[in-house]
Length: 291
Image (cartoon, rainbow, N blue to C red; front, side, top):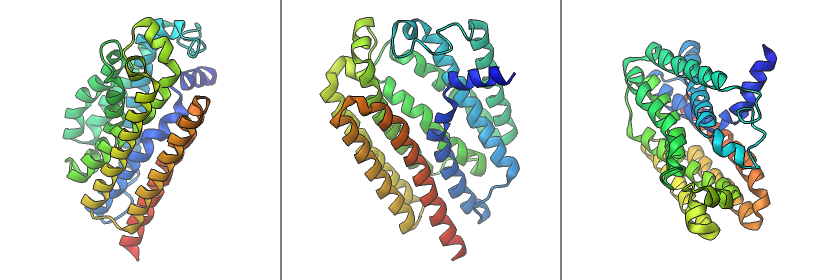
């Protein structure tokens, strides 16, 4: 059983959950301060939010691996994935997707009516991303939207509504994710051209992709600034935006210097960004509550 768990963890790169988990936690903290005048929403609600995040992300990643097997088999970079090399069969992938979709919908039902009403549309968006690259270079933006749903889900769980600050926070995630996915997709530029996939690098080349990525990251920082302003947060939160901007500058520098740095820029820089931003928001909220 443990071996199967490790196998499916490898399938969905479970350790990368940190990318979206930090932003749902940011939304939960800010919403909890507004509703409960506390950083803590309670163990039950926090557990439900984390289970919903796990179910949604596992479904999205599992479904992507399922429908992309033909391309993954042909791409040298992805040929060792469990969904490709035979370690996980088709029935296992289908079962994994169904179970996680049911988990997400069931947990959403347990949270509140709005969360339940949004659960199926969310799943459609998460699953739709897997097909976008076949038709449009907007696939990078749809991936951003998929992860941008995480903070929206967090605030819906606490407040049962979608305030303006959460929209800014989510849009920041959309542009952040789209920006780093553009960089990551540079690795597959020639492969995408060969098999007819519509990524931005395949259609516009490396230089334009770098420019689009930089623009996306500038917009991400501006949106996060809008989040801090509209949520009436303090100087520590604005400092978090500034540090996040510096991390994105470093990420862009790494890739501009050498495309071999893309894995480092993708996995290390983005992982740090989410954690650092969350800590600044947590400190800011704590200072304003208890100082």
